Image (cartoon, rainbow, N blue to C red; front, side, top):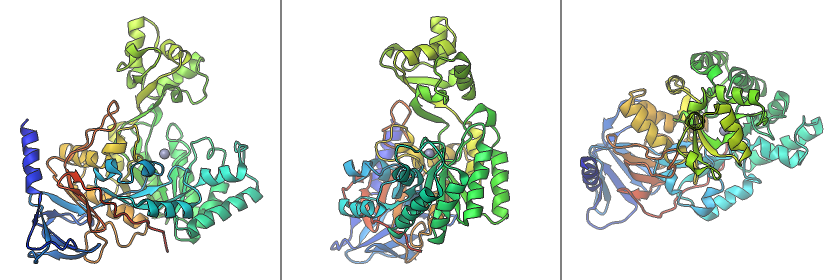
Length: 496
Ligand SMILES: [Zn+2]
């Protein structure tokens, strides 16, 4: 109750006062704790926006007709840049990107994991016509071009001629404004590709100054080999590498984040420009059958291995089950013991009866913490509009609330940098990601004592709290906690 009252009080404090005649073109953010994204300590200064640019930072007094936002007690930071976001379709139903701006995200990169819109030019044009609340950039997807060239017959290596045609498409995508090539080598279409195929395509984006971003071939027992493959692609294609949502997803590699860090640090020292992003969750949500990748769902040995890989049936929570609604909310272990059968038998029965939705713990906090502490690891959501995993609505506030404030894993300055300046630098966005005079005015104001996520595996759409003001290109999209409906996002075609 106190918390609610406090929240309303702080909302009042952040409300906007207009001095004299409003012009709407000049905004002064006063008295906030300004964290500029560079990682340096917060400063109590004011910030002025005119049009779509930050024009001054320092001790400033209001001018006639200027809009003034009182930010005392709040943090003023650069808008967040989400380098791994699945909103490409979501934007058509929700151009205001409500669940995204509520997290402080002001720039969204679509087309990760090898799967992108195509053609890139048409998509970016569409994004501009839609008028979106956030800025938009896109990757070219490896699987997308692979599927176009190989058709349904993609479960094989590509021929040199097919690789040449894919390379042409990637080049077209880069000319049309894509920021680089994404791959999803663990998925159906990307997986049959040889490392050499990916090197050939990544080399194309390298020539255009783009990056190679990969959901690597294995995030489980063979994760270290998969990181090495990503590094090799960067070295041989001469292209910067971004490892997507870096994780160690099975018991066999839990606790080995330091080994992964060593592999990547060694590569960085040897001249390969490798970075990564990480989302702040230790569990995934999917269908129960993904636990057994061999798809031998009635083979007790394969099932036992699948359950052991995630640390046992106690880590598998049934969230939806049409044929056995009474299972919902229980773990596979609890269901087995209630029925007096083994968890393996419970799994086989559930799959036979039509399957179930599950949430499965697949990572440990120690590894997530180790990754977030590396200077080359940024925050990304792997979420997006309509995502049924809580990361779709909660990622950025969750890092600020849980990892910074509650657990002290990172300083607020470090966390903000990982959400803004670091992805901006990775993407060569020279006029975003920092609070600095002359930069585009993507600016957010949040309450560092309140900011947090609320979305959960069972209620993935609950909105986060504490994000009070969000400004995109100088226009306010969240005003004292209220979505204004403004859609000032720019489509950013990548240019070297
Ligand atoms: Zn992925």
